[in-house]
Image (tube, rainbow, N blue to C red; front, side, top):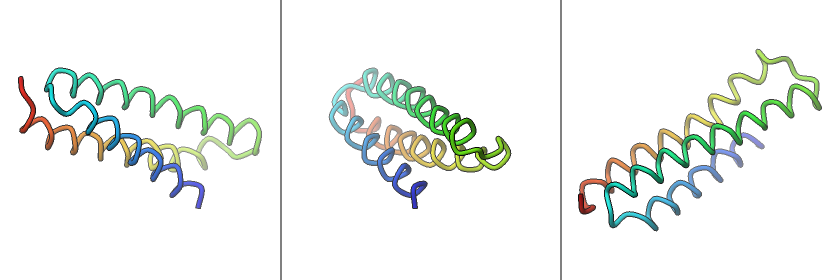
Length: 89
């Protein structure tokens, strides 16, 4: 359940940021890259907490890192590409 919540938060955050800055193509790309790096960092921190505090092994946490980070970043990439068509260069 926690994984689904984290993925949903990432998708909502990506959609919000990208739609706020959809007017300019250069800014849109910068927002996407900034979101992707920040979201991967947040998910990596979440993985680190799972390993150090909850006692999970890194091999147990890695699939959750890939899902938590990958799904929102892929969604943001897709949305950025879609919004890029309508943005000014």
